[in-house]
Image (cartoon, rainbow, N blue to C red; front, side, top):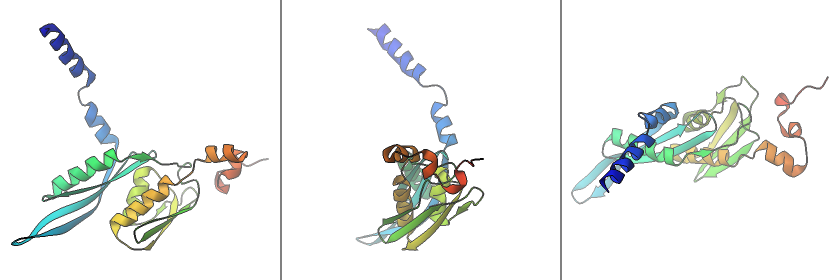
Length: 191
């Protein structure tokens, strides 16, 4: 009985390579987008805490957003980062940009995302820029309409990215060649 337990312990310890969890943490792009002081009214006054919004991405098409709240800023950042890692989802990219235009809303915020030619860069600010760069988008044009609330703008940007359709799937569904659906700058020139 004791030998079996020792063997199980060794197997469990062997499964985890030293520093395996640390490697994954290092390759992800983490950005603290917003830190806000929030108050809860209690008997005898107000209790203050901090709310942080953290964006995490692998710069290869996966991105997530997390919100952390705590009495101390470092704890709030840690909680937000952990939640963002759990909420990471894949988004469809077309090279260094997005496959097509999209408009997305969340609350009062509305975000317009438009593909751009290579070399344009990320034309965005604040939360939109953080989400797009963490997702791995390098060339894009954006416009934030409506509310400027950072959390709602980030959620709208995420909704827009998750609505992106895969070019190969759309071409197959429409019975067309993939090059017909790509933006004009990424089509192959025919001699």
